[in-house]
Amino acid sequence: MFQGLGTVAGAVAVYAAARFGFRTWRRQKLAERNRDQAEAILYAAYNARRVLRYVRSPWMGGHERVAAEEKLTEDHPDWKANTVQEKQDRLVMAQAYYMRIHSFRDEQSKLEDCLPMARALFGEDLEKAIDKLHHQFHIVRTYADAYVDDYNGTDRNFTVQIRRALFASGERREGEENEISDAIESAIATIEATCLPYLRLEVD
Image 1 (spheres, helix red, strand yellow):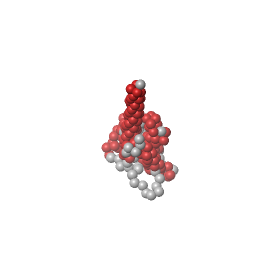
Image 2 (spheres, rainbow, N blue to C red; image 1 turned 120 degrees about the horizontal axis):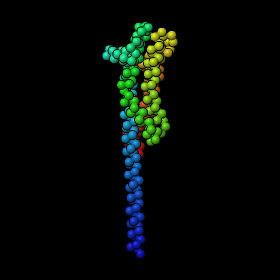
Image 3 (cartoon, rainbow, N blue to C red; image 1 turned 180 degrees about the vertical axis):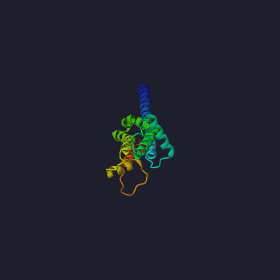
Image 4 (cartoon, helix red, strand yellow; image 1 turned 45 degrees about the vertical axis):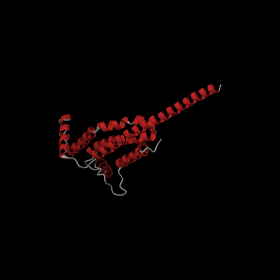
C-alpha cells in the first residue's frame, strides 16, 4: 500500500513540476514577446522623431528646390501661369515638403504598424501616443498647404504658427511654444515610459 501511495505521490509531484515549469516557460515567452514588441515600438518612434526633425529643417538645399519645381512642372505644366513670383516660390517650397514627407513613407508605415499590438499588449495610452506621433506628419503637410496661400501675411499670428511648424530649428527659447515639437516630445515621453522598462528588464 505504501508503495502505491509513493507512486501516486511521485506522479503528483511530476505533474506539479511540469505544470510549474509550463507556467514559468509561458511567462518567459510572454516577457520575451513584450520586450521584442517594446523594442520595435521604440525603434519606430525614434526613427519617426528623427525623420520629423529632418522634414521640418529650415535648411533646404538647391537640389530639393530643383526637384520640387520639376515635379510641379510634371504634374501641372501651367503652374506658373497667372501666378505671382512669391506664390511660385511658396509652391516650390510646399512641394519640397511634400516630397520630404513622401520620401519617408516607410518610417511612417512602420510606426503605424505598431498600433494594434501597442494597444493589445500595453494599453490605450501607448496606442494614442503612437497615433499622435504619426499624426504630426499630416499636420506638417497641412501647414505646408497653408504656407502657399500665406504670402500676403494678413494674419501675423497664423504666419508665425506656420513658420514654427515648418522651420523648426531644434532649439527653442525658454517659454517658447511649438505645437508640433511639443506633441512629438509628449508622445515620445509616453512611449519611453511604457516601453523602456521592458528593455531594462524592470517588468516581469
